[in-house]
Image 1: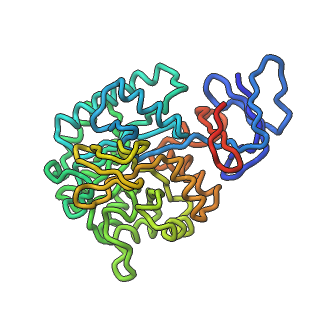
Image 2: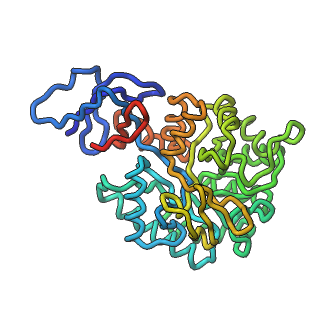
Image 3: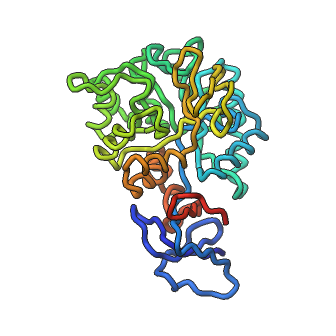
Length: 374
């Protein structure tokens, strides 16, 4: 049993509370001083903030390790690295790659998730499932994905991959302009898989049409899609207009701070902070690989040989701090990186908030927003 006390982030705001944790769950939340007992472990954080552990629904890896090409041992190292930087839950995000590589990664991740259910791994982040980004993407906005392996939407192929993963693909990014995309989206939604739109030149009308079919998520908003235009609002305009969940990379490189503030002002209940981190994250400047593509990291900017930005080199916690520095109210930023991230993939009743019955994943930070070890 553990007792926490401090400025606790509950229901979108900070409150002085005491929390009892038992069997890995938040068991009781009461007024300060009401939880007094002998023999209980007490974490005194009265002058600090206690927030939910961060949830990253779009991350390809870090510390030189890649979800798209990983062993079980490497997976444990990678998840420990996420936990160390404040990210307690992740969707392992795979990239477009040759089929054999994709299949191996899906199998390894799926088997790990199955084992994870029977073990408590306090030193490692929890895998919530898989976010499959590619290969059903548009060539016009392929970004850092290998065009060699891009393909039209294929439900039979996806079913085979889902089976291989043990049913753990929770989110898939697709270009709605691809042949057969509408039927594919409907089948995904019917099977319980969330659909995100990205790497596409789709227009406003197409985006609205598939949103009505159940696609309710946008992959790294502003990046790998047509820009927002007052006469051609495109995917971004459709997402704002219909209230889709909108991922946002807040590394200060992918999206200008003014646009970050604009998105939170327009739809604070739908913006989901992500890292979109690649294996170069947490590493020194140099040459790396991401999704089979060669990447150069210099001054925290990761690019392909042609200069295309290739994901980020930061953690979600750094994105959270950046959002606050950019002028986003800290309560909005925390909600975005925790509860809304979990909700966007249907996991809000498991992680992402400090509430009775939720998994007891939390962070302690000081008033300067530095992580506190305990």
